[in-house]
Image 1 (cartoon, rainbow, N blue to C red):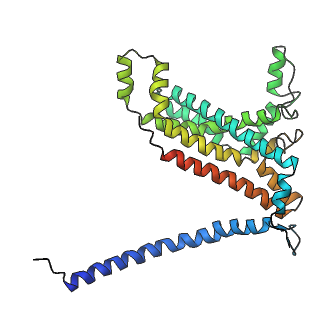
Image 2 (tube, rainbow, N blue to C red; image 1 turned 90 degrees about the vertical axis):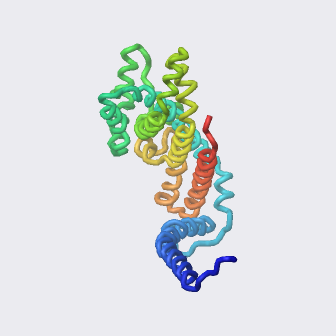
Image 3 (cartoon, rainbow, N blue to C red; image 1 turned 45 degrees about the horizontal axis):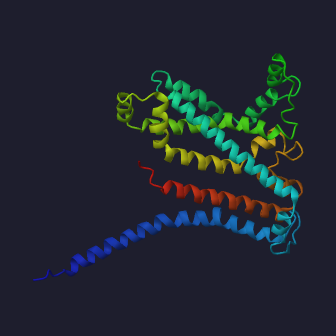
Length: 304
């Protein structure tokens, strides 16, 4: 005989499900409202502005469709700015990741005092960017800076670090690498601590050297962590603003002008808010692409 469902138990299950739905809706509504007001509405309104010839103090914007985007794509300076941004993002990401990984591998075996070393490497992350920039401006000073003084001691000519179109961007990249390795070192150390010691012990019994263990065990098993660091660092590199603004202001024959600085100048110095919004959407598209790429990479099964 098939079991007979009692009306009371059925009503009880329905009431529980209704209570669960009400709880879910009650929890979701504030988050949805928050994202609609503070996330999606600003993005939508920025796109609306990018379709207009709109000055910041002008109350009568003129609809021009995609003309702002077409003008930007035909502007040689904008193309150069995009190239500068990619240059900074790619090279700063690669250098920061490699230096952070090597540093984490060196620090990982340290037992006593490891917290102090982690703190030392993390200090630049906690330091205000303007304070770091002030120190690096002195280091790069053309005549009395420490770097040029050291070059003179070994008989080499002085380098116009922040003035030369050749050296300005590498100088900012070097500062950014110094300021960014601390955060990534902590992430890599967490990944290293998650690798079972048995792998290294078995490799040591087989006569593997330290370099072989690093190449055959450490680097492959850190692949998910490395992918995360690469993706987040690349997104941060495309959004760079403070270092460039404080160190060169986009100067050195526009060799350090990047997208975020270009947006700032169009919006608040030239007051061309429509074109600034169009540039912002170019940057938004790049960041969205990097985010999708990061999500795809993290879905890869890295298990060996």
